Length: 479
View 1 (tube, rainbow, N blue to C red):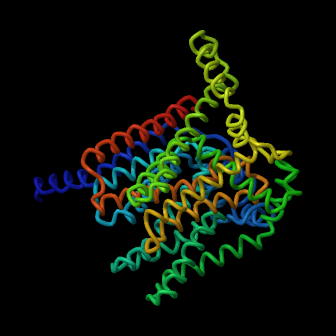
View 2: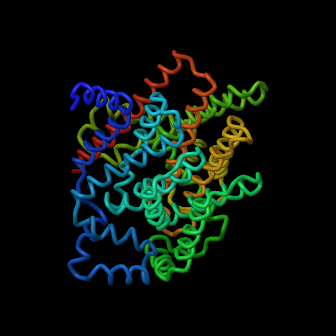
View 3: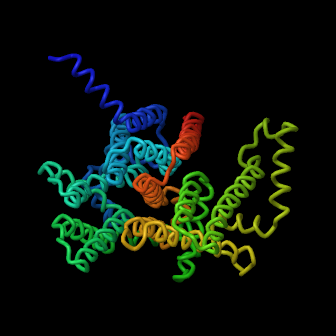
């Protein structure tokens, strides 16, 4: 046994993977302080009254097609420690694989940027319905989707895949497509890839066909599940009775405006994405009018986020009515923020409509502005992605569109507001993926100087760690 060689290999492994190792340790620390809440408590008691098979059959007939996810949720809600271990490992694995798929050359800088982008995601959204209940429906589906893509990515890169990986990938795929948003994204992306291969007369991957078949079967099960139809009726009456009268336009409104509200509320990740995208598009644009639009985009997103921040500050005392809020200095700051926002009533009312849980009864100027801002942010993002990557690299545009559509689809559910920010999880994952692709493109084209690389690292680290510790602080206070 060569101890020196083992030490060297361990040291080299840590050096090569320190961003992922650091991310894993941060997730361990966060999971240690997580507590039991929400739907998890109800799930944990179900096996005391009924056998698992009966529970799953009843839920399929009366509530949900997520039979695999529900079964594991019922089991793991009784084993919170085991869930903490599995969730830490799976989420870290999902993060590692997405970064690995994009960063095929194992550039440590790109890996670091990827990890910092994931730290910018407001992970507290995964406590929406309880940690176990929410993660198994969202972050676990993401992790298993990444595992299911391993054979396909290997085929594209000319690598062989071990039979064990194939088995794990198929099992992971079956889990990932058990959730509606995840299923639609996996099916849509793989169908488009299949069409791309047919049009360009490329070899068609058998695993690609398998993914499409399994996803299509799962989607059929979702659409024909009696429990899903029953649940829609029940939840419409419970959460949003007015929803029963909505047509396609109203549902598209519900899917779009609250989505932008979530992005502006969380402030960090979409802002970084939009500014990065505008900056990269500027590098590809010489037309002075188009450059003017791109500079406008940067000003617009900064203005919206700063204004939204002032709105949130001005109303903080209504949500956090503690002694500190009545201190003269704090009270004057809150008053100043309110004065600033109210001095621009059109924008103030428009920002308020982003957070409004419903559809405006009348067509007002703020309502029109809210719709225009939402449409502009989405369409301009699509245009800038296309401008940056070109028609030969459509994957970033497909990913962004798929992520947005996965959130837009929530507008066709009466639980659009009850479900909250967690339903934007898959959209956030695609935003992270596209942002990381932008960074990789900068490195591939040698478009990033040492000075700007250092500045970006500092900015990303500050924003990523700030978001992480904000989540950590919230969890500490709650538990």
